[in-house]
Length: 301
Image (cartoon, rainbow, N blue to C red; front, side, top):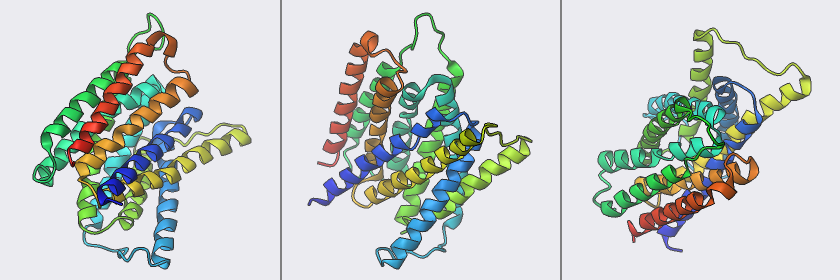
């Protein structure tokens, strides 16, 4: 199989995991920072077990301790800010809308990678820029009102844009560490500092971890983010593997397909947007997203 297509498959698979890992938040009433901390625990557990199993099976030989481990720790803090922001946005404006605005992480991450990793040399930048335009237009088309006469929650949009910025920065740090030869070990440090940074925030702000008083619901509130964190390990792993075969800017933009999956979940599973009323805008947005993906493929054709 052409190695380029291996990269495309890994990137698209990563986008599926990226969509699934945030779904449990729709079922949880935890505050974003509490949810992020517990999700970090699930991510740390999955990344640690994954690393041990892969090393034991001789699939990888990367060391646990490496010179740029501190960068992975910084990425944990960056990722926490991004995650808390998008979780707060989901609480305010819903799954479908928040993640369409978050998809602007694509232009941010792609441009940063093109600049810092000189990918203009091997990728056709014009196609990437066009893809950015189409995907941005798609995000705008997906932004609709859930109800008539409802006001636009600007703070929810701001949270999404903040998450887009920090997820874009996180993607650059991922790529830097991947270029340094670490794929799975970096996730252990990152996930650990997700837990630490969220816990420090909770302590600094003198917040309490509040769970539902009913034992059954309290257990669910813990399990949901734990599962989300473990699913995110799949997202991160496939995304990092994709960087082995295709430019990070392209892999990162293909990863934005998660916006399509989350739109479908938000519209048809959680009924966040009235499909019968906005179907024309939604279909146009979907077509724009597909065109954007095709342009990304042409960027390396």
